Every structure is written in C-alpha cells, then in structure tokens.
Amino acid sequence: MSEHLHYHQANSEDVGLVLDVMRTVHPVDIKLIEAFQQNLLRVQIKKGQILFNENELCEYMYFIVKGALMGCTTHNKRKITTYISVEHDFVSSISGLHGSDYSHEYVVAVEDTQLLAMHNSELNRLFSHHFELNYIFRVVLEKYYKDAQQRAHIIRVGNAKERYLYFAKTNPGYLDRLPLELIASLLNVKTSTLLSIRKSFTLPKNQNEELEEWGKKLEMHVNKQQSFRNKDIRLHALAKDIGISSHRLSVVLNRYFNKSFIDYINQYRINWIKESIRNPEIMQNFTLEALAYSAGFSSRSAFYIAFKKFVGMSPLEYSKNLNK
Image (cartoon, rainbow, N blue to C red):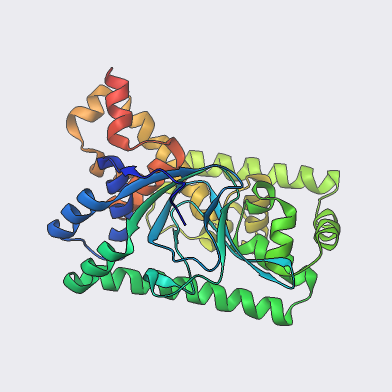
C-alpha cells in the first residue's frame, strides 16, 4: 500500500493543527495530546499519486493539511468519483475503516497534498482509553454521513442543473479550483453537460457590474461598522443592514468574492488581528487569545484554524516573524 510513501514524525505545529480541529468538537486531555505528539506522522504526495489502492488495507487515518484528495472506485472499467476532500478533512478507507477490511475504493491526490497520519493500530488503542476521541470521531463521522446522504439524494432525484447548484452551494470555490471532469464524475453527469450548465450561470456584463456594486457596498459597510467583530453575526442580518436579500448576498459572496460567508467574515477578523499584532503597544497589553475574542472569534480553536488557513502559519509564528 503505502510502502512508496515516506512518513516522518510530525512536529508540534502539525499536532497543534489537528488538536485545534478536534477541540472544536470536544476538549482534549493531556494524555491524548501526548499520544498525538508521539505517534502523529507527516507525509506528502504529488498530484496524481495514489494514497492507497483498491483491495488493499488502508493502514492510516489521514488529516489533510493542504491540498485535495478524491476517493474513487471502478465499475465496468469506468472510474467513479465517490467523494472529494480538502483541507482539514479526515480521510481513510470508507469500506475498510480503521483497517477492518480491504478497501473497495482507492484514493488519489487531485493536487500536491500535505497529510498527517495516525496508524490504525495506535488509533484503535487510543479509542479504547479516551472517551473524548470516540466522541470526536463520532461527530466527524456523523457529518460525513449526512453529507454523503445529501449528495446521494440529490444525485438520485435531481437533474443536472440541480446537482450543479447543490455542489456550488455546498462547496464554494471548488468549481474554480478542481478539474471539471472530477466534479462531473462525483455528480454523475457528463463533463460537457456540466460545462454547458456552468456557462449558463456565467453572468452577463451588466450583472457582473451589479455584483461589483453590491460587493463594494458590502466592503464599505463591513469596514466602517466593523461588523465582523460581532461574534453572533449572521448572513441575514448583514444582508438587512446593507439593504439586500439574503439570497442576493450569498450570490455576491460566492460569485464576486469567491468565498463562503464564514470565510469572508473570518478573513476580515484575521486581517484585523494581523494589524493589531503589528502594533507593539497593543501586544504589550493583550494576548493573542484576547485579540481573537475582540475580533469576533468565539473560541481559541476557531481562531487558530482560521489564522492558519488564511496566513499559512500559526499566529504565534506570525508574531515571532514580525519581531525578527
């Protein structure tokens, strides 16, 4: 399976990234932290490289740090995409979860991908000793199950246009990031059909100008009111503030800014925090966590995950680099 891959001990930053994601579900005790520090591994694969094959045991549970993977199976010599996973997703064999059986699918990199890995033997040992790990993975699996059920439903009953709209809504930015033939395979439509539908949703010039106008109004409002610092901010409330419908604001965010609502707000929060970190007087009086709460984040883990996503390093690293 993965003999061709080179696994290395994960560093403290890697461990912190995984733990921050886990803490969004449930607190993690010190013994579990130590176990992750001792057993978490790092591995990188190139675009097009297979992580594990069909009819093999998948020996690891993976966590995507950067990049994208797709799960595939073959039927009558035809490749079928079963799922797509990107940053901060956990990935393993579905049919052979935790190394329980041979995998019915194979997983391949859509982009150059950085992964963290925990061997199933160690993970299963931790499951037997740590309640919170069982709870965290139960929540993660519930989310994947609901996503898969929703996707299966829309593929069974929805037409090609409905499938396209479903994917665009649930995966903002993916249509520009991922190969169209991959998305077509996932949605079980022809690539030519998907391309035609996508073109039909390309806005004419006057509508693009309207999106730009609303985009600038949104930017002006958010900058002036600093509404991103409200931890309870909601899309419908922001839409009402600038005099637009919730649906229209979603269109502006997805098509003009190419962002989901939460990414749009978190980008503002991170930029505000970066500016604050650059001010020595502020840093003398406030901790990074205090800045995060002041910026609108409701938890430390959400702050660290967003900072890493938008800046590419932890807030502590960013602060140290500025001091250098």
